[in-house]
Image (cartoon, rainbow, N blue to C red; front, side, top):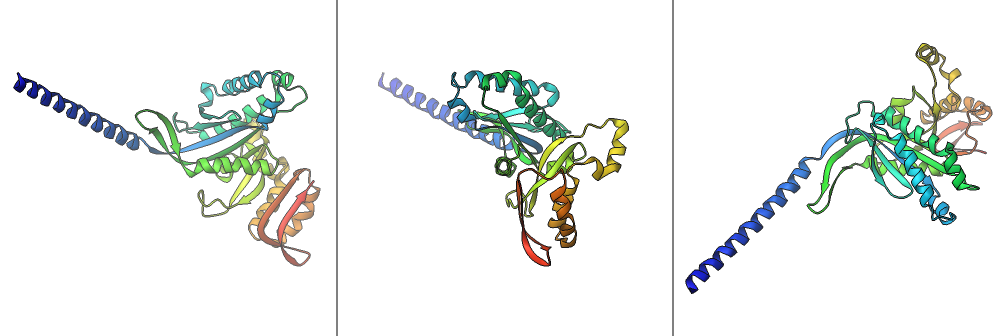
Length: 304
């Protein structure tokens, strides 16, 4: 009897070791599969931020739940299948949305700007939101970037989700803070600006260095509106250039400063001060010096 009992014990121990070995191999294989699933993709990202949301909640009679649900419903209405957008993270006062990470979308850059603009308009013009806010106003800001990420399933056997990793994500949130610092509500980096400037009006608002995104200084642009041109008007509008763009004088001035063109910058300075396209409230801080009154000095303009 004791011999058979000993054999049974050894058999059970062997089976237990075998099971542990299989579990370990499965875990390694699953983790390896997750790592192999991270693929390089060019994507566009936006973050929608409800500014001062926590203050709004504190002053709300219903703890903000009704208003919060209404805001989220409005955003999800815009994120319909035609938008090809995928909401990634939702953290109370902000939502991050991606294009071309999960669903293929060749037009991800214009789609990101179009969707961000639609969400912003819907939230700021909603009568139902205004009725709940009463004397408080809702300010929804948008930041938009485009770039390469590593996307795929990540996590562990206990918790795993589709996500992406990139300095573009860090740059997205940094860009939103730049917009807030400049008192504007829709900002885009120069990469997504270059792909969408024929469809939207932009104003250059900052010139920054973000080493994780580029080894060169980057321009930051405020999106000020959509160009509403029909197909028959499109070529005419492109030919008109400055005449059709309310931000043209300002952008030309900024371009001259960035290119160290002191003569052009000085010549455009007075026009910029008088132009209707000049931001009502903006301080532009360039480290690049330019010539004014025969003196070389850092550019620091302030408009109120």
